Amino acid sequence: MTTAVEMASHSQVLVEDKSSVRILPLNRPKQMNSLCSNMITRLLQLFLAYEEDPNVKLLILKGQGKAFCAGGDVRPAIRDIVQGKWRLGADFFSYQYTLNYVLATYSKIQLC
Image (cartoon, rainbow, N blue to C red; front, side, top):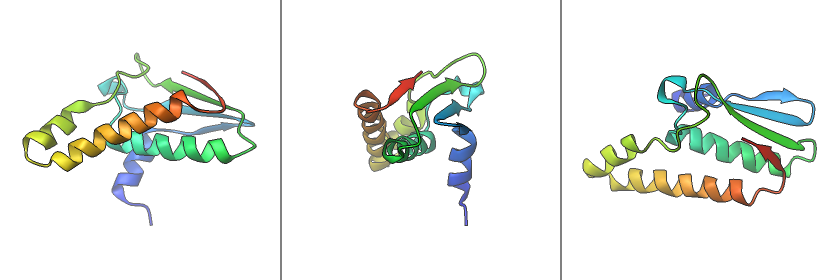
């Protein structure tokens, strides 16, 4: 059974399968495709799975709408911290930097 969070992350990071290429459109054009927690988690899952998949040779990230990606959407994380939910804010930044590390050290070709 798919949860609402999983459905949101799947609609915000799309997957197009073209032979040995995976195209990952970021789909939050009204927010300039800024990465929310759900998107970061989904991208981490996809990148880690594709790194192990010998059939995937190339990953392409692109943005829907006018912007590619405005970076991490820190507003919800800051709001959580201000409201005393510091763990949620800390988790956001932890996952964001983990994604940055995975992208920087990825063994396969990626285009952004």
